[in-house]
Image 1: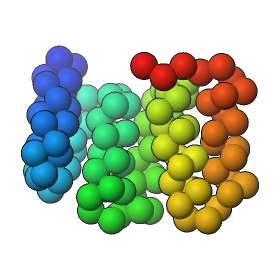
Image 2: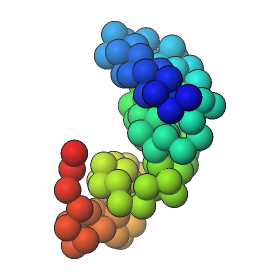
Image 3: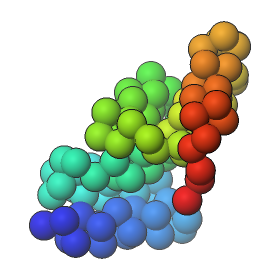
Length: 108
């Protein structure tokens, strides 16, 4: 099921790039059902929710879920930092961004 989940996540990326965020959302949700431990699917779902569908609170929960699975995933910390910056929550944003830079995490 793990490889199927990766394929479905990949289709979500393609659908989002094609301007079909609702279909991308469905793909990411399907990938999560196939493999509830796939941090990338939660992260990508968070991105499409934030950027295309305006579901900011749910998006932030998806980034956190991604970090529950992989606490060393720098993209999620960085994105949480930028999300909190856009919400005007600068202290929280700094805390997330510090985790990336001070912990020496590297982007993939």
